Image 1 (cartoon, rainbow, N blue to C red):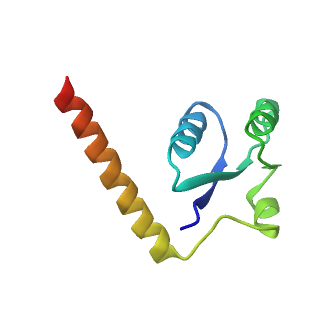
Image 2 (cartoon, helix red, strand yellow):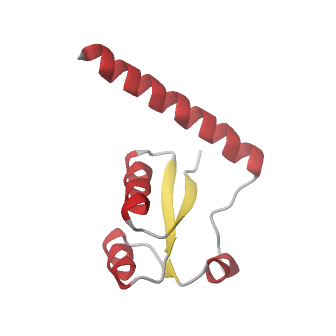
Length: 93
Protein backbone atom coordinates (compact mmCIF):
# COMPACT_ATOMS: atom_id res chain seq x y z
CA UNK A 1 0.00 0.00 0.00
CA UNK A 2 1.21 3.52 -0.76
CA UNK A 3 2.18 5.64 2.25
CA UNK A 4 -0.33 8.23 3.45
CA UNK A 5 0.88 11.71 2.55
CA UNK A 6 0.83 14.17 5.44
CA UNK A 7 1.16 17.93 5.46
CA UNK A 8 2.47 19.48 8.68
CA UNK A 9 1.15 22.93 9.51
CA UNK A 10 3.71 25.00 11.42
CA UNK A 11 7.01 23.27 12.07
CA UNK A 12 7.82 24.76 15.43
CA UNK A 13 8.62 22.59 18.46
CA UNK A 14 5.55 20.34 18.20
CA UNK A 15 5.60 20.34 14.39
CA UNK A 16 9.19 19.05 14.40
CA UNK A 17 8.08 16.20 16.68
CA UNK A 18 5.35 15.32 14.18
CA UNK A 19 7.88 15.36 11.34
CA UNK A 20 10.15 12.94 13.24
CA UNK A 21 7.29 10.50 13.83
CA UNK A 22 6.29 10.67 10.16
CA UNK A 23 9.86 9.91 9.04
CA UNK A 24 10.15 6.92 11.42
CA UNK A 25 7.02 5.26 10.05
CA UNK A 26 7.00 3.79 6.53
CA UNK A 27 3.19 3.99 6.37
CA UNK A 28 3.44 7.79 6.15
CA UNK A 29 5.30 10.28 3.99
CA UNK A 30 5.80 13.97 4.63
CA UNK A 31 4.02 15.67 1.74
CA UNK A 32 4.65 19.32 2.53
CA UNK A 33 4.86 22.04 5.15
CA UNK A 34 2.57 25.03 5.63
CA UNK A 35 4.29 27.78 7.57
CA UNK A 36 5.24 31.44 7.17
CA UNK A 37 8.24 31.45 9.52
CA UNK A 38 11.66 31.93 7.89
CA UNK A 39 13.01 28.90 9.77
CA UNK A 40 10.34 26.76 8.07
CA UNK A 41 11.99 27.49 4.70
CA UNK A 42 15.17 25.88 6.00
CA UNK A 43 13.27 22.87 7.34
CA UNK A 44 11.48 22.33 4.03
CA UNK A 45 14.76 22.52 2.13
CA UNK A 46 16.45 20.09 4.54
CA UNK A 47 13.51 17.66 4.27
CA UNK A 48 13.17 18.07 0.47
CA UNK A 49 9.47 18.91 0.61
CA UNK A 50 7.53 21.86 -0.77
CA UNK A 51 6.52 24.70 1.55
CA UNK A 52 3.35 26.75 1.31
CA UNK A 53 2.34 30.03 2.92
CA UNK A 54 -1.26 28.92 3.63
CA UNK A 55 -3.48 25.83 3.46
CA UNK A 56 -5.42 27.17 0.49
CA UNK A 57 -2.20 27.37 -1.51
CA UNK A 58 -1.33 23.77 -0.63
CA UNK A 59 -4.81 22.50 -1.43
CA UNK A 60 -4.82 24.08 -4.91
CA UNK A 61 -2.36 21.46 -6.15
CA UNK A 62 -1.95 17.82 -5.25
CA UNK A 63 -2.88 17.44 -1.61
CA UNK A 64 -2.38 14.67 0.95
CA UNK A 65 -6.02 14.14 1.91
CA UNK A 66 -7.43 10.67 1.40
CA UNK A 67 -10.81 9.13 2.03
CA UNK A 68 -11.65 9.57 5.73
CA UNK A 69 -12.44 5.91 6.45
CA UNK A 70 -9.01 4.85 5.12
CA UNK A 71 -7.30 7.50 7.26
CA UNK A 72 -9.18 6.34 10.38
CA UNK A 73 -8.18 2.73 9.75
CA UNK A 74 -4.52 3.67 9.26
CA UNK A 75 -4.57 5.83 12.38
CA UNK A 76 -5.96 2.95 14.46
CA UNK A 77 -3.29 0.60 13.09
CA UNK A 78 -0.55 3.16 13.82
CA UNK A 79 -1.70 3.76 17.40
CA UNK A 80 -1.89 0.02 18.01
CA UNK A 81 1.70 -0.45 16.76
CA UNK A 82 2.91 2.47 18.88
CA UNK A 83 1.27 0.99 21.99
CA UNK A 84 2.75 -2.46 21.32
CA UNK A 85 6.24 -1.02 20.68
CA UNK A 86 6.08 1.11 23.85
CA UNK A 87 4.81 -1.81 25.88
CA UNK A 88 7.62 -4.08 24.56
CA UNK A 89 10.27 -1.46 25.36
CA UNK A 90 8.96 -1.05 28.92
CA UNK A 91 8.93 -4.82 29.45
CA UNK A 92 12.61 -4.99 28.53
CA UNK A 93 13.57 -2.46 31.22
